[in-house]
Image (cartoon, rainbow over the protein chains, first blue to last red):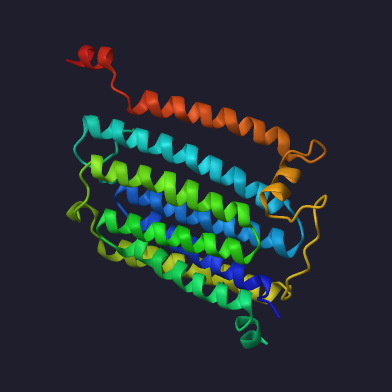
Amino acid sequence: MSVPLHFYIVLSMILFSLGIAGVTTRRNPILIFMSIELMLNAVNLSLIAFGRYLGDAGGQMLTIFVMAVAAAEVSVGLGILIAIFRTKDNVDVDVLNGLKG
Amino acid sequence: MTLQAILSGQGLMFLFFAVAAVASGLLVVILQNPLRAALSLVINLFSVAGLYLSLNAYFLATVQVIVYAGAIMVLFLFVIMLLNMGQANLNTSYRGIRTILAFASAVGLGGLMSAVVIKGVAPLMLPAETMIGGATPGSVEGVGKVLYNPSLPWLFAFEWTSFLLLVAVIGAVVLAGKRQTSQEGKA
């Protein structure tokens, strides 16, 4: 007896929705980044679960690429954040509207 | 049937780590203090690594702990402390109706997707694992045998991942590094 696949998929969707709630409610860019990490992890979980239950090793390969892209995204994003902090004291994303046009 | 599924070895592992992952994920979203949210995210990443183990993805569970819970979270904590955001900031407090709407739409989306999965997907049970060229899938050898197999599509993308990381490193240094000339130009 084992856990059916949709347990993992529903858990992954719960985590993804939590990430969406974080991105839409948080006003601090670092916390928005963390919520994005939450969403990426949820997708990784569903990829690995699908790969395991369908007997396809491709799910784990895609997860490796998602992890690499997440690492790159975080390093560049935090670099941008530090650059913003050099010129502005505020980190509220509602106030950072310099590109608004 | 559901109870039997939960009371198996994989089911207990799933239950424990799923509860931990959802609880810590909720804390990431609602805690006011960025430092505490970051530490909750560490718990969440560990729980997801445990779920990877329950799916026999041994190598990826290790990578999850080392890369996510180790490297990426250290980077997050470093930036939080560098920018002195350790205490709860009133600027990041919630804003009434928008917050309620955002949470409601997130719950609605999650419920909708879950309903689609529960209604539309037959309960697929765990199949027996098929060996990959004599290696256990999910072990270092099994992952390597698929990733570096030239007849599968992963090798080319994997090589370009190294280029992506190089670009990211250069970008981070350019963005966050001190620029003497441009700052003198501004002054």
